[in-house]
Length: 435
Image (tube, rainbow, N blue to C red; front, side, top):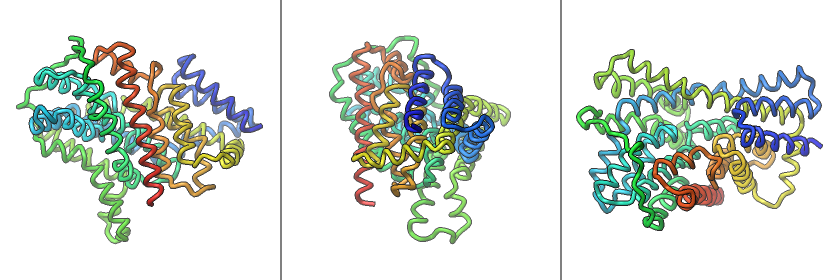
């Protein structure tokens, strides 16, 4: 019975988000309350469960997601992202320009949300396409693939960061393993796929060919790169040093291994070097940071709502029943988690919602079957990107900016998203076999 109630709850959740167009946060709350009552919890118990789920989930994530948003905003507003892109373009040359854009997309995708990174890199893509007389889709698909993969796989992006918290994983290790998995996914879904869609050559609409900043106003390349990747470098270094048995030997190592502190270091450095150091007044830079928190508020609410959903499933006994049922299936847990994420993604469109919904259902398997939590994060993150279609905002952003038909968008964007999802799963399974 609990499984049937949970299944009905998932159907209602999908219906509220996909068809009723209710915001995901309210959808999670409504379904969580209804699930709790249907599973036999009293109204007071439901309220306590929702509150606990919200608090436990957001407690450690507010700093990570908030600081990550601030870093991305400073990198974007200061022109650092444009400096990284234009510098790599000048180094690559015409024959390797799409590979350079792939690297650019990955670097600026680490601190920037997908939509922000997309809007920032679009003028560079169109400028390069015009300069070298290449189809915009051929030039841009590798960069977009990199932005999508960093959004789906890697913390501190909201989906992966929330999954790490819910499964009790290690953010640095997830970042390190995720980078290993991301590289082949981006290569296959980016430059290699671009070769097969090179015949799609449509001029972008004039409304979307934004002007780029004057080169002289941009910060230096060194400062741009260091500020953009510092938290990632600190977390990765901390994870590798811990793996070498050096954990606890240095207070600096402990600081570097903490996601919130690593991101705080990145934000402070960016504020000083990319902001005030480049001639912007301190109040202006602080307004960037305040705007970043405004931009991320809704995402934090969605993450909290997903935490409430998970807690109600646990307190109502549905999680144990679901785990027992899943254990009876022949599919390996990592494959099962990926497939569940794909299913929710197809239904609701949002990769973040797909990942968080799947986490609430699959979490009991982590403890009961000893699944590697970091690989589970990557498996769900990969699945949450698959088969993007007309109910996904990213689908329409890509279609409109590149001036494609619906069929051409399916041939490019949807295929790319599915490739990175499948390759991501294969990479996770390969790591699971050797770790």
